[in-house]
Length: 216
Image (cartoon, rainbow, N blue to C red; front, top):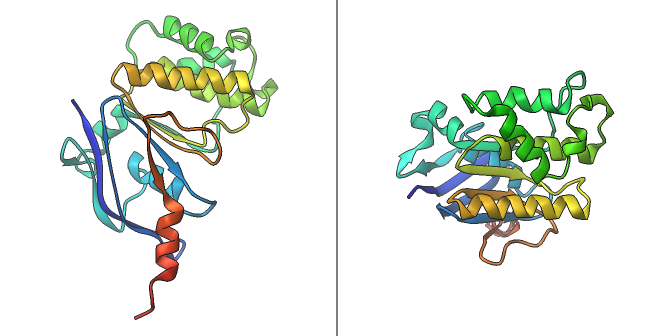
């Protein structure tokens, strides 16, 4: 069973240390929720986990092998959803999802897209061009692409943003289903309740520790 770990991580961004000495460990079926105020490093940690940036020190590993050893392999095992929703305005919802899903699946793409749209409650938007979607609808389309194509690790930055209650419930159900199948989820959140069995990392605590450390 896969294990995803971070050891003694140090993140430096914008000419300042964001956090230091951070560890995490996640096994198959696990969930990790990142908490903390704006600027505490939640998005930065997710980007480190995705391999989009590198820690100043420390190691992020998959089954005891640093993800930096083979970035292409790590890219195939995870989905990363950031703050922006890259929905092409001239393409329909289905066309947008077909582009992303075909990068992961060699067959059954259309069936996977239909199932994902249904899971997120947006089947009625299948033929709507991206330019006509609201912010919440774009977010659901972006989330549908991680449901449509397989990846063991979901890295989600404030995934509930712009969603109504029904959409949040659909997303939570999708997350639960992914975990039931052995998938892993890491997500940042300000207010949304975490799954009862989720681990939590409070980035604000690391920030407070930095501010309290005396200068040399």
